[in-house]
Image (cartoon, rainbow, N blue to C red; front, side):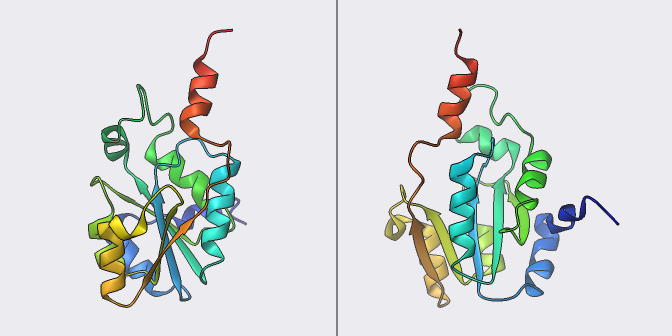
Length: 161
């Protein structure tokens, strides 16, 4: 038995389109860095999964994550390691990456049924929402679990004493 079977949930961008075709619909899509996985991330991904039959998580590549300006030395975990951790979650059906600043191109290619973002986003202002709605999909904001932030966690770890 392969004890690392969750790794089969990881697909590069070129394979993601073929892999998503075999997933049960509706397909929910979300994206992010997910650098240091915490309770807030897990709750968010679980809620996202409840909106459909399959959950696709697109991770910012390391280069894309660095462009977000999250701080020196970020991401702490490289894209392969972040993908493995996210893929190990039962709520996640497929993990892939995007190298651009936003996943617009990936969303256009994959055409998920539901786009999910955190509650700090105004969904109507996102170009991603317009794309998803243009082919009949919908966009949903999920409230964050208060008190959880990777940036705050990293600052706490790095704080002296």
